[in-house]
Length: 253
Image (tube, rainbow, N blue to C red; front, side, top):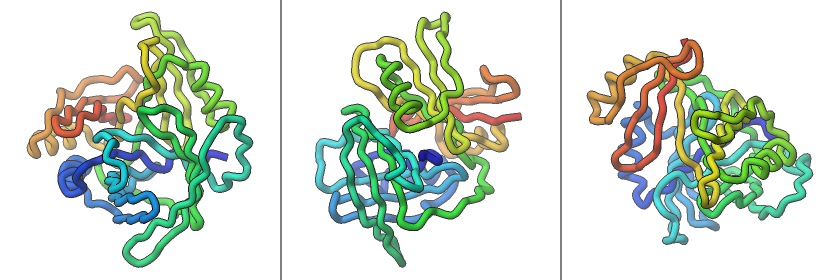
């Protein structure tokens, strides 16, 4: 059973540089630092109410390009999944300052452009209440040209609820919304050639005008606040010159 999105992973060639950027953007410090020796990963984790954001540096794979690397889903029991697709089972021992934890993972190898993992923790993480202005993930966006395969993987194989499936005449493509753990996986099929891509992120904001003012004062390129496509929402876009992640801020009124 899939319970929620666990982590969104951003790969960097400099933890120090990326920490400065994301700490400024989130207006919070990393919750924990993780070291994992077998795969050669060092990570910084930022916690939010419905998921974690991970900045990862890998010392063994020099071909990993900087950017959104993938995301993982959380399961309390990997053995309950009956997967007919190919996957690689992995065990990781993540070390933090005062403890270590075993993480069992399935690497579903969704695309060469990004990874999709399912994680099971030896000790489940406790719920987390975030008082920050930017407090949770609203949705993440994937682009594909194989939406039927995505439906088969997410809904039929993993049991994630398909909340919306519609054809959008305006741009001639299919839009899918999958819901899990108070967040949405948005899939856009516009029939563009190429592999599936992890395209962008949207964050939930408590006070968007205040967040915009903060970001402008800290050197970010932020659009004007306007009404969102969804009723009773306000939105603004952020352009990250350094890290190239299409980013939307959303306030639900």
